[in-house]
Length: 120
Image (cartoon, rainbow, N blue to C red; front, side, top):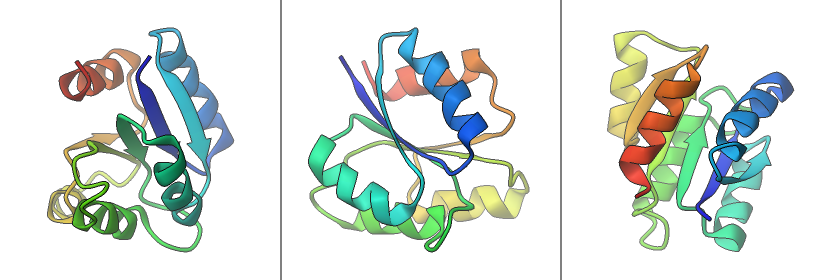
């Protein structure tokens, strides 16, 4: 079973995305901050990370850069899921090392299709 770490502080978004993924057979672990995510990445060794940008404390962009610069985590695909949908935001996501960028509200089929590109 593939493991997905969901870094999202909105309870509604966590419930929705967790539901989408669990019915497709993914194990989903949710955290509400970048700091929590850094701990869980080491404990859970996820196959993919879904990452919001606007988080308490450190931003998703900062977390993405840290994970992609760490030899232990750089190979984990990161999909940014954010309400920020300007070209500048998407450029920042790309510069931070994100493998994909989805804008909210996220369509279930698009989310699953994107994840399946990275998890075979």
